[in-house]
Image 1 (cartoon, rainbow, N blue to C red):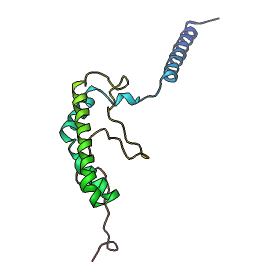
Image 2: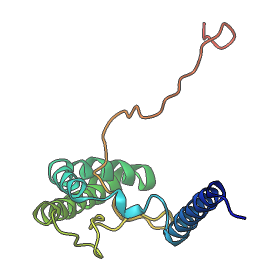
Image 3: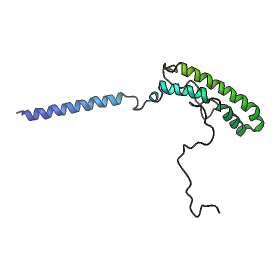
Length: 152
């Protein structure tokens, strides 16, 4: 004999089981919870373009410094400057392109950067934003001085 209370419990259990099944199937069909395209949007593309236009000249100084550390002073004073100017012009062109087309997903249907990303084994490519000059304080560490590590 079925009581109204038992049918209420059965109905509640079936609703809970159905919702868990539906939620589980949605999670299984999802690609990942935080897709990579979520980070790139039109306003990031606009900001990246403006940064490339305004700060792309920092490529000259960074290229001279990189060539100097890799190949020496003579190469940095000739090839480093030419390479920096070339990278500045590429960054400026990419910046203008990204500012003009910022509302539209142009790079493979997304808002990814136009410039090729650097690969660790290739000495080329561009970061998403222009290089920074000077001392960077994004690392949150310091050396604690104790009497044994303090210099006289």
